[in-house]
Image 1 (tube, protein in one colour):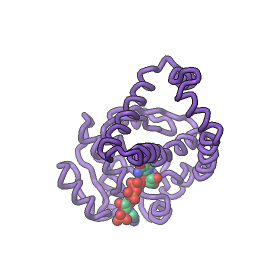
Image 2 (image 1 turned 180 degrees about the vertical axis):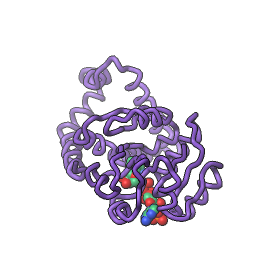
Image 3 (image 1 turned 135 degrees about the vertical axis):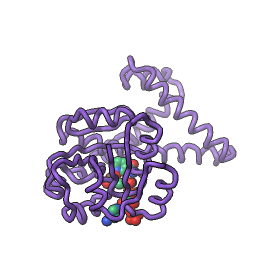
Image 4 (image 1 turned 90 degrees about the vertical axis):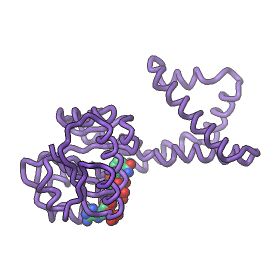
Length: 254
Ligand SMILES: NC(=O)c1ccc[n+]([C@@H]2O[C@H](COP(=O)([O-])OP(=O)(O)OC[C@H]3O[C@@H](n4cnc5c(N)ncnc54)[C@H](OP(=O)(O)O)[C@@H]3O)[C@@H](O)[C@H]2O)c1
């Protein structure tokens, strides 16, 4: 199979990295000439990667085309490209729905996918919508695919995928606080990375416990975990999080 990535940015880099570590049988990978320096780096690093002359050549040469451009670029360029009927289009674009994608590409063979940067390590959930056997089989080499039948339901997952930077900011904030208490940055950051890593591992390993039970199990009555949780709740920390989820949700129209 020959595949092409329209848009050579962060997510394209991560997906190509994941593919390179997988057993997927890919003959060639075309990438668009933009961003020039990243495109050059990828083509140097991975034998199968070639930079296409332009976007139309990439579309013509690929069996599957991954849309890895921003929504505004997608709205500008997609309707100018010609996608033959036999092409499979996989869109990573966050805020263009299937109806619009069909209108822009004049192609019905469309699937929306939410990869996240850790796809480069072939780990983590990958949302696929609507259900598609071949797409699921492809992404099962790159992480844990989760199929969503209904595009309306996928909207929630787009919203939660916007919690990467805020999640890492929690690391940063906690680590900066440790530094303010006299701990060296290197030590503080290493401790925080490992603390959250262990917590995540634990959450995955204790699948039999619901998340509610996990919260309960992690605190002793009148202990410090119970105290911090109560204080954060009192200060509406989690209510604010829900509010922000609701507001980002509105950005992902279906
Ligand atoms: N990053 C993530 O974790 C993630 C996760 C899921 C979905 N997505 C979605 O994936 C898409 C890309 O995200 P990203 O983070 O990879 O963005 P990005 O790093 O900004 O990459 C976008 C790429 O598109 C290129 N581009 C701009 N105009 C173009 C054109 N006319 N033709 C071809 N390429 C063009 C840009 O090149 P220049 O640099 O030369 O402008 C850039 O290389 C977005 O829709 C985003 O919502 C991203």
